[in-house]
Image 1 (tube, rainbow, N blue to C red):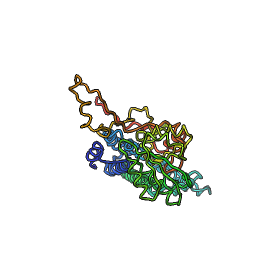
Image 2: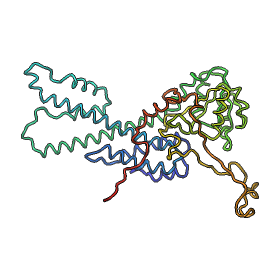
Image 3: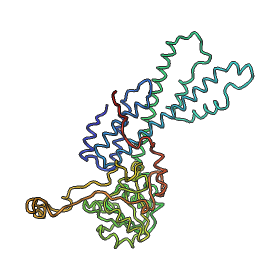
Image 4: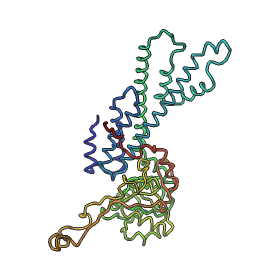
Length: 411
């Protein structure tokens, strides 16, 4: 099995930065898990599902704040389920064709067709499937008019070999689908950026908060299409990632203005559009984003400014904000806010009866309700907040929203 413990340690120590890198490395790890899972003669899909669940449960527990981990685990579980259903459907079509071929001699005597219309249609549909699925038809049909003298041992051996081949094809199909998922994660920036010219127009003023790579690439793409616009960047205290983004935008030739977070309401009337990134997009269309984002969304709504969220599909989370698995916040170190040397007297545990009078809270995330979001732009296009649940339903199965293995209680 792959080195799961090393990846868990990286998650626990926050050595993987960003949802994009987390999602990609999680998908690569689960691909290795699928590749190295031993397939039994029966219930091949169940074996893969159980192996992915076992690893996924550990990954989510290691860093529950990074929702991209759970998203990818659920996506892979959905992939296994869909590939298993496709394999079963193709095997059934092959069996139907085989049964029709047994009556070939009778059909010739009656002058009728060898195969029924349904069987012909099934065979035609199978040719449109990927090669990994089409090969199921090549091995699936049994010989026509089998001899009655064939031994039971031969039948049993053939059955086992057929099941083993089906298991290998299932694993191969799942790995191919995970490879496509990894490509989707890698291409999300480019796919989202291609839509920039449809939303950013000449001489507009764009406001963003903090630092989002998706937003940065989105603005770069509009600049490359000769769009002339200005960018206001709220600094994103206390980490001040907006300073870094402003420097990167200036290096690309974009006219950029840095403002404090407290100046958002004062400057929002000059803005044509707000474009921000997201930590996660929930099933109800709400957004978990860096702290301060809710204030920005309220300011945009108050002044009728479109509030646009750009995010890759790996950030689509099938859970709701009230789910116990969702940690809406994570408290960072107070050292980002204050100098312990300067405030040491205020935080002295012994001077005031053992309890300090000064407390410091440094939250990481905000929650933006769906009614404050004007538009979501993902790698699949633009979507209204009210329709995000439909998009999420295409990526996840309801049976695998809770990542937990079936308990095996001994009698």
